Image (cartoon, rainbow, N blue to C red; front, side):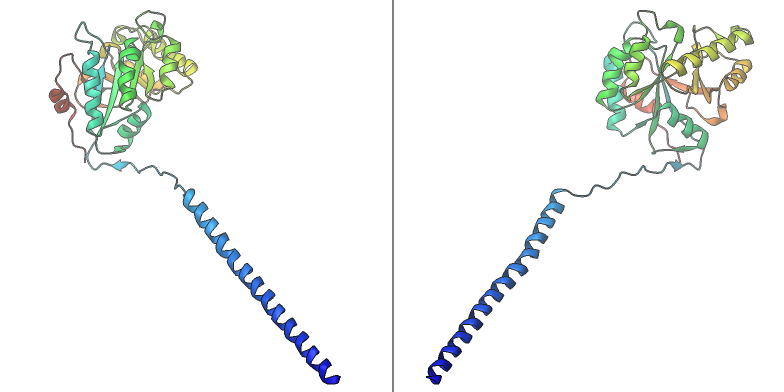
Length: 285
């Protein structure tokens, strides 16, 4: 009898050992496979959402020689006289700038370039359009937007009610594109060198105040009507808060000319693309 009970006990112990071993192996298999699945999910998530590095602005190039800045002078983008450059020609010239990797400066960038003798890249140009004609919007802006270029429009603030000039609403609309900024071309477009000091000051101060208030900006550039100015104009421009001023004198702009006597390059109707390319070509080191 005792022998039978011994055999039965041995069998029960053996069954218990086998069952425990099976449960232990199942538990081990379950726990070791879970981290692998978690790692796989984490890897897939990392693959589907790559980390983007923040873009950093490239440092400006400090020049060893004085900067020679090509400032292009346009007026109306239309046809009719020597101050009007046809729409097709303007578009071709903008295409050339884009294709040849020119950086078109804003007013702020142009002032920085001239006053610090540095540039954001080797090939730069500053596009300016005088008088703020309405066709700057209809014929000029499309090309600027197409080629992702920038231009500065020198506005006559007393002419915004005229049918062939930009209204305030149109100026605001152009500014919101990021392709245009505005500078002063005085209030009434009078020859400044023929006015008294008081009259000149009124033209300079009032135009700047109008632009600052209506376009929510700090206007720092003045463009003389017909390029006419004298020593009094230069002094008053500085006193009024302008950092630089542009003339109609032909040539590249350099700081040797002075802050308030900068030259520009006149773009004339019928100019070929080859002539345009030669006109703006300059090497800055």
